[in-house]
Length: 545
Image (tube, rainbow, N blue to C red; front, side, top):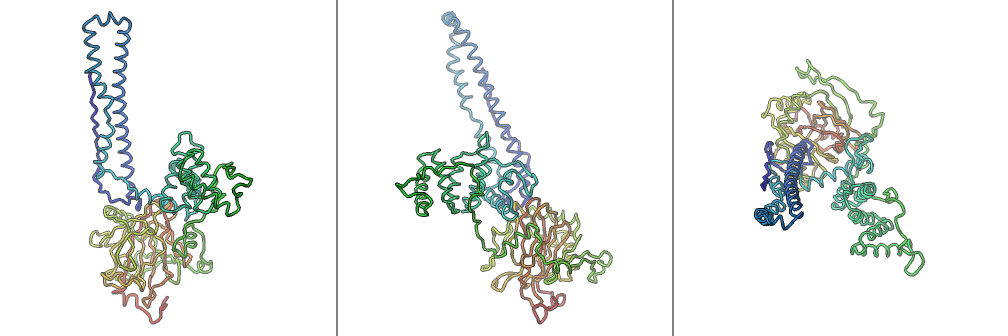
């Protein structure tokens, strides 16, 4: 007998990729995960082949042992009378069997896992934070765009099929992530969907017990005590001595007795009769979304959904025209300007950045991407925030001729001095990527903002749109009922400050969550210094506005 030794050989032909985590914050970073998945598929296939080869070898041993046994058992005495047969029998049951045991106990799995672990610097692996961030992003999209839970679970967005449907296990994981975030509203929605999908699954992807444990308690936390009790009864049918469920059952019963929903102890109408007699339906529950700090939440989300809120009279006064701003080269090719709002003046310039320039900017920015930050109003330090999900990088004008050209173009069109403009910030938005309503300028209480620059406040914002977005991703101004939709090659421009230097609160704006597609933007923040004669201030806050 010959023993085959299984040595897994893995060839990883991938370029090194340092992992920084937070993959979910930029779609461009998530593209590398497809390569990771391909490599894992290859590893798993190699592992299965190795296991199949090992089992094939064991089957050969089995067939050989069975064949010899059949021969020997026909006439044991005659068989053992042959000294060679006697020797081979002893050998088979000693040395040969040890070899068989070696193959039986050989486990190639750890070797494959170890190999993959060693290549975590090459393969892109998302972290637990990425999983949580992706789940939260899906909830954000669900709320902002009023997406139905069941439709989402079926892989549909706005009535269009985009992906395969989720399993009960997939829905359970979304519910679990929501639960871990203290979000019982979405826990109920997704655990409820998991429960309904569980009933229809032939190959179960999660246990009914696991679903009910989360669903019952979160249903209670949403104020639905009766339904929580019914779900707890269902859980106790599966695990009769579940200690936490038994304690919750008693607590729910006491609450319902106090509310007069069920009979008091000793009276007719046994509480045990409160069973689920129809499929669980979240539509029958009273559910309350988690509250947040945004006073303009309703307007913000309506604008993101494309609802028309602007007064038709205001919209009717908006015009489009060609502008030159008395710049010589713009006489040759005037810029197409579209008015988006008058007070404050917000405009869109069309076809102001070329495809080549956009590709250069993207390629330069991608290797430098880091989680986008916001400025702490107290310390002035930059730090990540849940209300801004994207990755950004900064490009200096001297790094490439294309960056220099677009910077000069911004100066020519706006008439402002780019010497006191910040470097070009390039941003890519990830899963549900967004930036909730904010000001670009520093408010009076933010005394440390831009202190290191020494250029004063951000007087104006120029925002390039470097990709079309299939759905979502608008730039909205909730106080103006205005939504700007990304158009590749165009740019939005507005002044953040009144002519007297005070911040204009009407410029508070937001980047809506990206529903489908990848959103690329870049922007120049232009500061007050050097603009004294180009954008002179007035005696009144709205002079010239």
